[in-house]
Length: 159
Image (cartoon, rainbow, N blue to C red; front, side):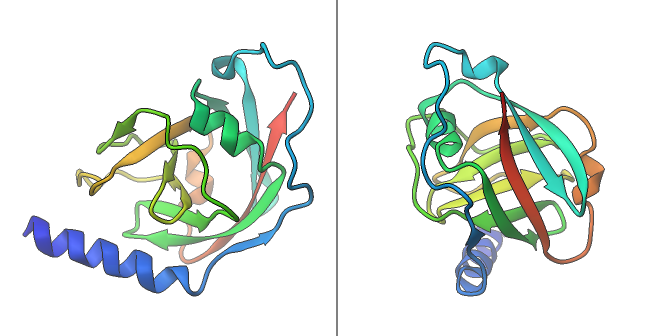
């Protein structure tokens, strides 16, 4: 049963990769700012269908590398009725802690993609190897992602 679900997940990711990607990035370079600021206090704004939600970012090299891609707008596709995921324009650091579980509101990096995923519903399934790396957590308003099909999401760092 687990092998079947893993294969279905892997196939779904492979099939969708051809149809999705980074649509636009208004600035592909890192934003300037204090290098000593702790990532745990940094925030990011997601804009989904005109609605903004904030994300509290984790402290890791993966998160810092993700922030260097911002601002970024992605078409995010639905996967298993639990998450939206979008293909990043390049791979980012995998030096963050990996996990095979998630919570509603988690924003995570899936390195085989390379994809960013936002979890809006829990289905009690484990994430297959190699797992995900947590980038941050939506503070409130995760229900804005609970929509059928694809959505365009803009990611912006809040100073």
